[in-house]
Image 1 (tube, rainbow, N blue to C red):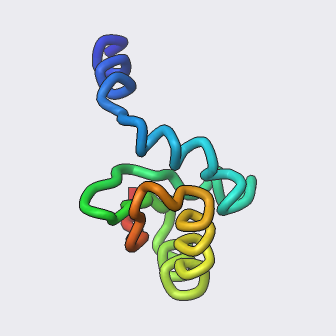
Image 2: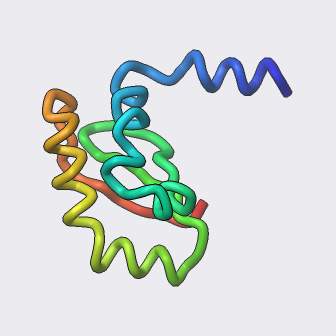
Length: 87
């Protein structure tokens, strides 16, 4: 199990580390406890959400603000979209 955790950490690239470094600032401490960046590929950041109600709320009402915050703080990464799914 420890090896698996370490492999997951080693696979995380510079882009993912940059996103994680600003994540709480972008979404706030309360949301950071409920939302977790899962992967970043092809300009799309996938975020895990803990409940269906929260999934609806963030995808309908908070997506734009989260995307704008990430684009502002991580402008060199080319984040084009943020998508949410149950995790």
